[in-house]
Length: 177
Image 1 (cartoon, rainbow, N blue to C red):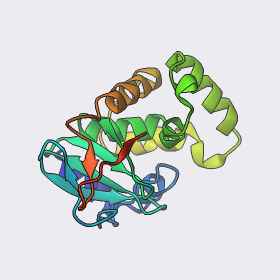
Image 2: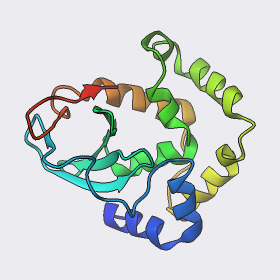
Image 3: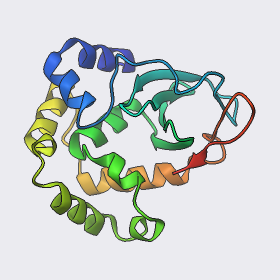
Image 4: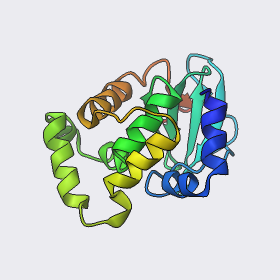
């Protein structure tokens, strides 16, 4: 399934739409960029594909990688493809919590960090793993190895700069999460 087909399926199926809108904070109906004039340092093309509840945006960078830009001037490469980013969201719907961890906590072994986040968020019904598995099946995604996907997120964040670093219209760089 192409990126366009994946995004269309999310938009067209109410249950999928609700799952990605929350808890994943990936709203495919909000495609306005977080601010006008954004550009990648590399000059690669940016295509907005979704938004988040706090006003941030998701972009396909150079037609492949998924980049997230917050409304607070932060950005991070999430994955080398939309498909991998959606696998992350279905397996670890609270992936954004990882972005906000302290550098020392993020540097710890991923399996331990994942276990801690699971424990912290286990009582919240929106993080029910069955919903994620159902969303993955509906998109034809393989059930993801949660540790591998979160490790992939960590590695993608580390690859954000320099090529995937966003700059605003004035030329000021975003901060990497």
